[in-house]
Image (cartoon, rainbow, N blue to C red; front, side, top):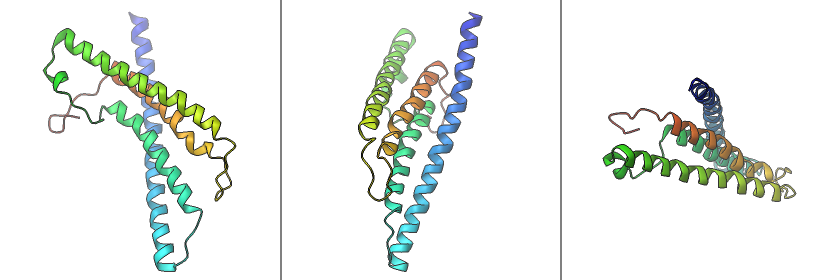
Length: 169
């Protein structure tokens, strides 16, 4: 029993680190996207001279923000949910519903990692004409976010966050 508690504590410590990293990276990607969008608007409508490099970087920033942010969302249990059954269920039924949701999320995240990695490998020789870099850098967000989300899904199952009275989160 003590070994199981130590493993759980160690996994949750890993989760705290990975969730912080994912949160920071997603926030950075959001800030970068906002700055690039403002830069594009300024250059296009004020200076009247568009830049070609800012659009693909903006797109990649949004992609990374979404897939890394998904991990944080999984961990906090903030995905959109219809939880009538979960709220009304008690005892074994509630545990069964929680297990089913956990397994469904696990399957989704494992698909993200597996197929995202395959897409990344297929895109490694496609080059973005504007930036001159491999398109696999954009696709890498999918398996990377999936790995972070995998840790978050398991951590959420092991240690679900307490629900807030006002928001239900």
